[in-house]
Image (tube, rainbow, N blue to C red; front, side, top):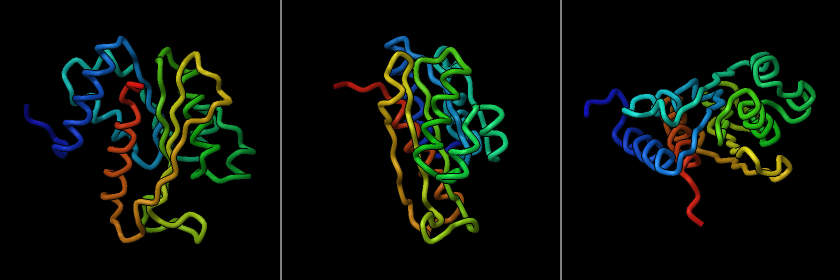
Length: 170
């Protein structure tokens, strides 16, 4: 099948759709630095409507607060690129959808915006599942590297977020 996406992204998105469809699980995305790339990757796959329930692109802090109900105090205290905010984004997406699982992504894709504490390439991720204890935080903070381009950071974050949407086979 022809795709507008890199082969690795298309292949992983196909796996996310196939495996979640097989277990009857739906997903929702809450994206900031990826700007909807995760949802776009999923919708590239035929049959994605059975799995992708919705996607939120909340690029600004205002959108995170208004759309996903992320607490303004969380952003002020920890910053938009923090596990606390990513977790609140995932919880907010889950509450504003009927999906079974949510993935949230927030980061510094560059080339500007980095700080010594959160340099360019820093991306945080969170996953929330319906019916699980919201106090049980499932999150990652990854440094994809200050030497990467904006496009490389966004693509790496997209791939990681897709991987987080694969059902756990414990």
